[in-house]
Length: 282
Image (cartoon, rainbow, N blue to C red):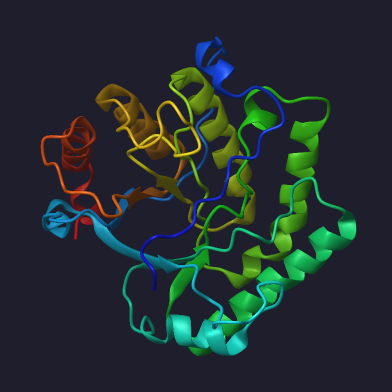
């Protein structure tokens, strides 16, 4: 697989960098959502010189978006391409994510949604047949990634997103885990908490373990902050919110970057790992 996975562009209808200065009330719910124990932390980091994170209790995660052979249209499921992509991971003991970011569901015509749902189901069926022992799911599909329709919705955007997520239940029986994406777009911690809590609420409806994707850098769609590390205290709040409302996290990132063991996010991650129950650790 290509380690440099494409990252889905932030779906936005309003705002932009002006949101950095906005004051949005925190919406972390008081009622704790049900989560399976123990909480798990998965490693999908690509940093050059990365140490043995398994010794700290991190578990393996892999993924790919390279599911099509050269010249094959991405508008259809390339069964041979899919089989080739997962053949190397038949016996993989961790979790595996499929990165398909062009079959959109949110704010699409009904016919497009139905067609894309059918493609997601078919692709998962091919994966299951090719690698029956693989534990897998789709990155950022259940629910689909949105930020502004949650944090500052325009009109009925939030209701449309929720309705779309309900329609996406057709995919859930065909995957093992749910991988919602909770990347950091802005410096607004309260905004991130609102976005993350609502996304995790939606992810719970599918009845599968929920492992949220976190990235220790600001998303590269933010031209001012993209590529910078998320501040240590912000990062710890992300880990703690996920511990409260999810079953685990997949920490992703670091492509073609040198490992920095003194980075604040990593110090907080080590501290966080030390607080987990012993049976979580590898």
